[in-house]
Length: 116
Image (cartoon, rainbow, N blue to C red; front, top):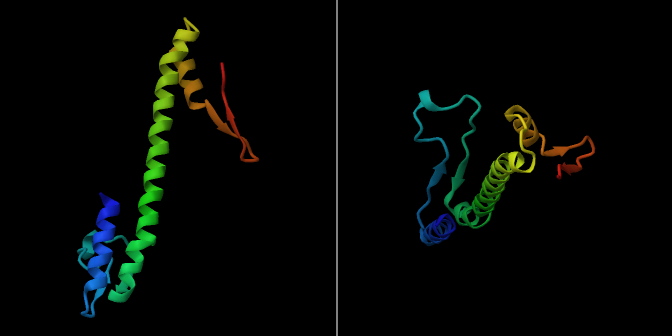
């Protein structure tokens, strides 16, 4: 739906002929703005390209990051449930420790996956 919205928006901005400027922070009341927040302004001719490239790329990146986070959480839940079945009598603290340390990254950036 978001990719479709980008396509519709890009086509809408491409069809417009009036000159306008779009600000990323213009309608945010000053009390709600962050001090470090930068105001980005785009002119109408720039907007179709932004909605066809940069915005679509950002949506896809966010989707992949959320998907990986979700799968990681599912694996942690599975590991938490399966560990006591594989090793009966293991303490909850040890299970928690193993779940947190199941996927480790060493100083060289290599990932080590704990196996049973």
